[in-house]
Amino acid sequence: ATNSLGRYDYDTISVRAGRNPWGGNFTVAPTNGTTMVTEFYLLTQDWKDDESSLPLKYSFGYTAPTSANGARRILRAAKPFANVTTQAMPLGDSTNEYKLTVDVRAIDQIGAYSSIERTITVISPPAGQRNNVASGTISSIDTTAASAEDVVEVASTLSSAASLLNAVFDDSTSSPTDDASLAEAEALREELVETMASFIEVVADSEAVESS
Image 1 (cartoon, rainbow, N blue to C red):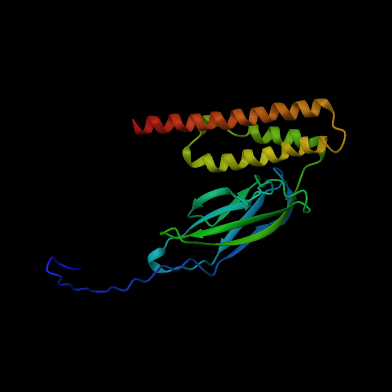
Image 2 (cartoon, helix red, strand yellow; image 1 turned 180 degrees about the vertical axis):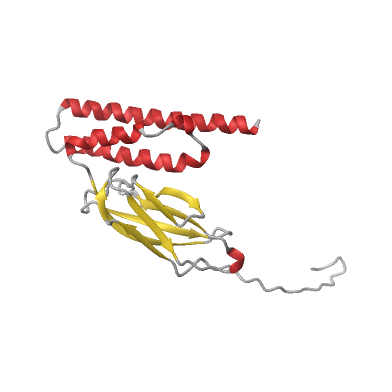
């Protein structure tokens, strides 16, 4: 620091940057399953971090197979719980033996994180069952019980259902698909969009009431 007479003084401090979490592991079981049908169990353990950066939170996600830039989609937002069970795993990459990359992020109090990835296989139900599976998933979402904490998980579930409906349309370009099945898939896609819009509206209304 320099004053108006040109005199100055200085001091130094040492700052130790926080480290990212380290040492964890990540398992997914089973490693093969069917989208929207198989119940997958994701578990992460044994993470360590500097004492000042604890406690940790854990976010589970996957790399969207249809994303050109490898965007990460969230299966479950960051919470203190180190495990999650889900049927909302999307369809794997149809051009790569239906492989899907899933991951966990261990996130500390200052936002630093480390991640671990695993590759699993997620196939489609039989062609004749796809619409029924997607319909059951969409119908299972209760918009009347919506809360802001559920938005990420609901969006993930609907995204996975959308990937299944997209498979119906993709198949119609390469193999014969009856018109009734395509019409049903189109109606379900519209219902999916309406469900998400209703969910967001209910959440917004409830937050407005809480803040008033």
